[in-house]
Length: 569
Image (tube, rainbow, N blue to C red; front, side, top):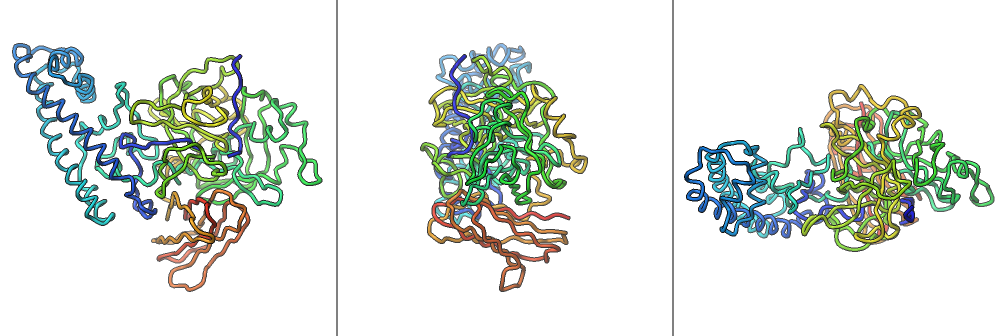
């Protein structure tokens, strides 16, 4: 058996996420309100322009040579590989780029003349796109961000380039995470998502992904682990989130042990000090903590929290009941744990994980691999490393334990894994693999405890567990407080009658007072104020007035925060 590496419980989220243009970023109107949303756009735009220019040069070279080299075989049908080899031979062309360009257009079995015709049209589109990218670089330097975004929204990415922009040098595509995918998994059709993207690391999407909080004695509540809503009353997470508090590696030892809290001996399944934080619903009490009875770390590292109230307006994440995730397949991980340093717009920057940075929701992409050591038969693994020269995959860290891995299985996004463990320092290329418990291989126990996974109310919106714009009034994915005290101000509109308005803020812990103020349209004093020692606060208003509402959060340096406003009917 290989040496077990550290579990992903609280200490000090995602160690890295997409940094380059090849991994597009989110760019909603709300997220553009984040500080300096175009700060990293110049580099991304320059990289994108260089990539397109290089690809254009390759296509031009092949087109110039192909007419004579394949003149006598235009009516023949060569496969894409053979065609690309002949057309590009001796031309110094990037043969793989041509192969994949043709393959994405499903031209493998097309006559050579169709391949040639496509490459001619492709060259024309590339020239136009390249010209627009060069103009966009000028626009970025001379226009205000809002006007530049408007210009970028008008630049259409050629359809045959949308896949290529996701292409790795190994010929695979690095898919968009689910919350950035269009209907049917389409790639973005305009330029903006490829170059702006304030929310590529920090996110307030994935409403089914929750922070599991612990009320630390004398210090308020803050992030312990991450979990996923899998039924209206159940959150799936990791057993070691609780058992590590008593240094227990098995369910038997865990459930029989106690730990000291002040003068009190407390069992790990004592629900009094554990709560669940939803971006869209705030804090929900826990009614029961259930540890998988066969837990023996790293085996069966699963627990289910039964909630004290039913959650009916957040969709549970669909469980993977189809097949295990395969080595080489990509997945999206989401968590509230410790993360790399973040820029002012919420995107990651190089550097080791920052101690004490748990409490902010982030996402990243991983590529699954088989687990080689004994004891991991019901897990899948991945190694946190650079995928190729410009593309960075992510990984999990302390506080992400229990969080989800989402992957597309049989055409639908499903919950495939539960974060369990990995190298203690959470850094790329260090230590052994990181690993998740396979949902598919534990589905019987999960469903027997959690109950029905589906919620019929979301039948018309099957991806509402990823994003649910129907209830969202506002979302600010990242803010860094740089003074003490410091303030985050935002505004949003209620456009129709609703039953309740819930505004929530979650932060990294600084053990200082966190204050949330919510002011109604036309009012001069807050309709709700929440001032707490916790790392999250919530305001709820019944029958909120239609119009523009203001939210103000007071925090302390170096806290990071996220704010969400949601309505219910």
